[in-house]
Image 1: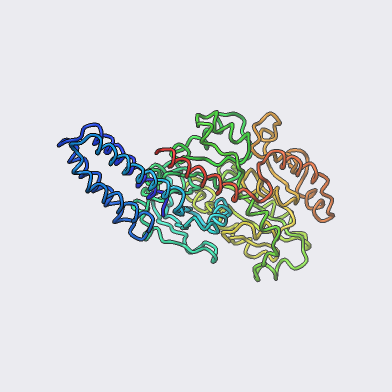
Image 2: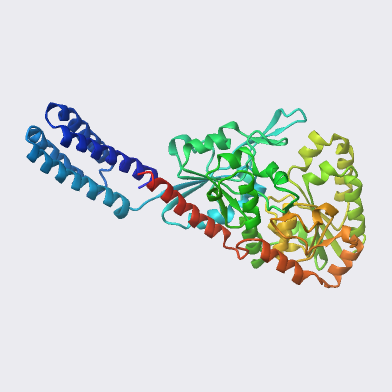
Length: 492
């Protein structure tokens, strides 16, 4: 029986018991209408649960006693005995519903971009194996915006998710009526994103009206912040405000949410499922796409990840990308896999149109390079697993890649290397151009397998992030399941 249904029945039984108290206290004609109402309520419970034998037998016994009670309405002693007997039956009925009938929980996972599914995947993997849970993956539609913040293009990525996931159409999943006990989201923005916007029906404040537990799991891994105020840009958004629970990746991450006004009990420090995803990928023999295999062969592979932040803050972004290409592709023993952020194209078009022409030339140039690959797969773990090292700016991929134990070169500013910052993930064990390591130096480190910072890098990571052992999804599922059970049953 669905948990929501159980709770509605239990609440109704509580109301019926209050009615019996009224009948016992008043008796006579005043109690007759209330007795009719109590009998009607119990019959409604029976009609909705005829297949539950224990419920049916108890209610039939109780309604039979109610029929006899009409003759006792004017005799206080008989009425008291009759009501006492009926309430014993309703108490037993409550006990059966709580303890004897299996509780089912419906969970809806509502991602919007397939490339961000790794923030929810390990939770889903645990939940779908739980015999007491019915899980639905419901990718939701979204819109791309133009420079004037108008929604210009409708998008849906349900077809881009891994083949092992049974996708439920958002048109077929009527969450308003189904009212799932738990909904997971990874988009906190609602109308606050300048590049994309989910369909208004799926805004977090609307979802929260139809579930007992709206859980926000960040689609990214957090790095560091100069101050609590800086974190508020991401920590105080419609989705974080509407959520019943927020999943934090570390203790510092939790503290930042709390210091930005969220209730401490709302923030669960359980880690990031994105680490689960990369740790799982590292254990597998990744099937290299055939078109990549012909290029890679026995060469060293450098994953180059560019971000929206790079485009927005680096006025010389195109030239800097070209320099990276030059430094690595000129070496025949190296291959570059470039993974541009999924929103790169729309960012260039809407927020940096000055780059548009040069960006097209850059793509043309790349297509002519014999040792260059553009990764357009939704699953980032493929290129993470295939590569031997990462080159990137400030991004979630930087922090996620730390778990692979492979070397990283980053172009972080000196401000983002300040040891006094709040580190949700300690990434200071990577190599940095601002600390004197050039691209040529880094290529040499990788080619000669001389990663002298590996031990420090892993020590920093493990001391800063929670559950870096592949168990985040498991722990999130079981904690949220427990919380939703407690949340509903404590209302009684």
